[in-house]
Image 1 (cartoon, rainbow, N blue to C red):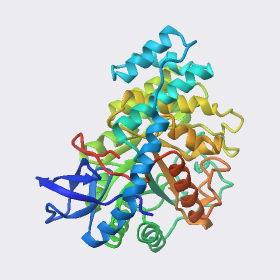
Image 2: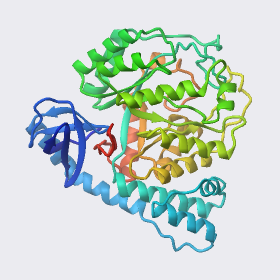
Image 3: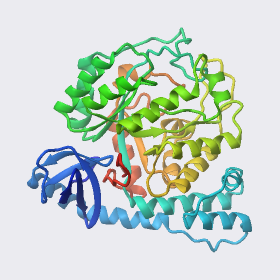
Image 4: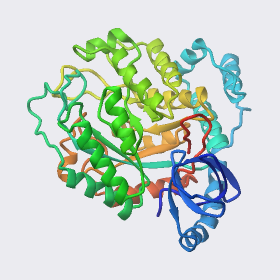
Amino acid sequence: MCYAIPGRVESVNDNIATVDYFGQRKKAISEIEGLTRGDYIYAQGGYVIEKIPRTEAEDILSTWKETFFELQELDLRFSRLDLGEKGISKRFGGIIDKALEERDLSKEDLLYLLGLKDPKELNILFKAANFLRQKYHKNACCVHGIIEISNYCRRSCHYCGISSANMGLKRYRMSRQEIVDAACEAVNGLHFKALVLQSGEGAGYSAAELSEIIREIKAKAAALIFISFGEMPRGDLETLFHAGARGILLRFETSNPSIYEKLHPGCRLETRLRTLRDAAGLGYLIITGGLIGLPGQSPEDTVNDLYLTKELNADMFSFGPFIPHPGTPLARAKPPAKEDILKILALARFIEPRRANVVVTTALETLDKKARKEGLLAGANSVMLNLTPLKYRGLYSIYPHRAHETEEIGIQIEETLALLRSIGRAPSDIGIVDHPRGLKC
């Protein structure tokens, strides 16, 4: 099954294509020369990434059509909202009304929602976020792949298992051929349409080497490529953008400069934010967010993390739990509760209901196997599957016992598709352009 649904181009104005998907019209940036009305394309992340033959597209669409509308009806049933629930507080009801009317929630509103403990109110919170997700993103769910190309890192972050200070970790660096082969198998063999290439910072690849790897992948496999190599100078970002990268995954981890500097020895938050702002200025799609449950983190810090993600015009909100690693200075710290992360996913949907994709992270699944489904029903609409070759995957030990660490990718795909079908989601990214960089499922 494909992780994008073919669409028919209705018009192309400048470099913006209007594309029809079963009667829904979306827009996507086209970098393909000669794209015209009547062409069939795949879009990913708000970009047209591939033109496909009419007969191939029509075969896929004929298979999809009935299933798509069946899934859409199931998704609508899951997202129906009944606010007639008795026993909820007046203040809570008022905040939920504001969220559903898409009025700005105050900091006090968000802090109040973060502090919720009543199961009845939590259920309404998650359903309200899911309602807004369905309203603007319908039943599309982005299914992206990630390939962790190296676990070398020059930084000594106190929470991360691949920190340079972890001397007990066996290190690896995939060769250019290994990276290209893994990417081509993901796209051409497994039908992924968006890939993240990730490594520790300063993993030993130059910008020139990475750009050649990206060019080779793009020449052999039509996909939206995200980079995740840590902080980079603007010149390197520009080099990789010209090579074909169109997105960056770089979490700022915390918006509190004091906590940031304590956890990242010798580093400053502003330097990390500069990379994100430089990337946005160059046209990259932005995936960013924070770690929840860091030692010393307050509810106010968490709300500020949400505000900062919105300020950075993130295309995808990525918030996951802090999970202590035994090889780090924070080995004895405690992870947050699953419900705390689900609240953050819901609040992310409230503050950016129209534009943002909200991802269920692997770290959240590591806390609880049921968390992927719960996250998707709390406003999220994106998941990432780990495509790193099994011989390396366990060595990318940012935290212990990661979900799917030993699973063959075929099992991951099968389980993901079964879950999405069970809640009425289509594993597709059908693109909406609503700001200069574009992007939305």
